[in-house]
Picture (cartoon, rainbow, N blue to C red):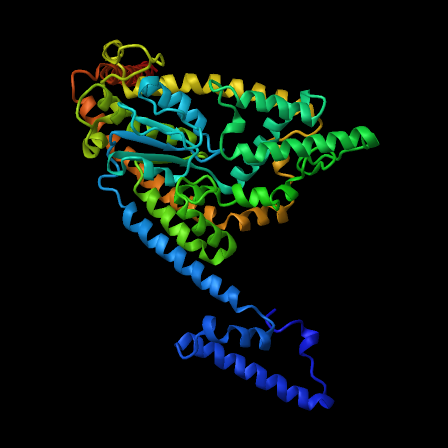
Length: 518
């Protein structure tokens, strides 16, 4: 409190002189503060020491807040001015997949983007921190955990951005579980020293990109790994407890409990409001140093977070595509039609699909695209081999790929969690997490909650466009000679109705004849 505790302010009747001095002090302080706001008093230069002596408070903190507020406002104004991208819904020369961690982005990368773009078209060292080389010729795909600030190294007017968002509470759960999953893999080592040495050897190999090289896991996993080894060593010294309980998210003898994780400085810095900070370009992994001052101010004064939220919302508005993890099927369908169709058209050398035309005809696109991941192959040969590829076939390829990828990830997850038995993180186990913990997660991710709502609005608009585009296309297909399958369905239906009607009339006629005979 500015003037101390309540006990400091208690004034007894016998302390009338002290009371008058206290009142005078309060009045003088009030006048100084008002004067500073009106410009009559220079708080910083002339009256800081006086206020400090009167109130016991630091006017330096007030100055720092004012400085931070101005810094954040200037950044937000500049960002909003430069964010507006012309024709944001038309694919440009470079596709930037801004991968927010734990949103299912890996599935999109391997089962969509890697099917659309060959290795030769992928920008170097995707998912690796700030090793992007914009000078590479024919670089068309950049997929990374880097935040939006990396756009400073991209040709902004020639770049399109896509991303996926997830319910903030589920994303925090997933970040917690994935940190433990990766860290638990190191428990095969006898001690932390051995595990750390092994991970260091992996990092020294240029051809290998470890999870420990990727933001934010390069910070989260080592911390969680140390926690797991510390708890395992403690169990070995003391012996395992008689019972661990039935709450996997609160087994402190084995792993850091969820309620401790969400309040730890590492989580506060990297996880909470992570989507908003990443899309705004204000993570600790940011490309430009000037944004680190903005980040520091927003992390220090939470009331300034609204400026960050407005920037993130605007950037979502200008993106080529925004998906939702929870709406997996619809998101994948929209991605194939809004993004995939344009990539297919672009890579076969035709003009980029106009967004209005895309809405009308993307469902039956028949142009080709790259599927080869071999860097040495000639792209023209690859295009000829896949000239009959359609958006529908892209979806079929995606579904097959997703099934295999999920199976692999599930096995790897199970193997990791065996090392921390009986802790088992499932959807059922999440339902037993106390309500107060869920409320705290929501509070700590207030910016992400609002951004996710905004993403939902964008998603609904995209979904409606997809529905609107499918109606005229299907009508056109029904009236074209190529619509053979549905035409036969109409014939079969007509024959079926005719047979039912014939049988009905036949039975009715038989009844009349039988009545006449009687």
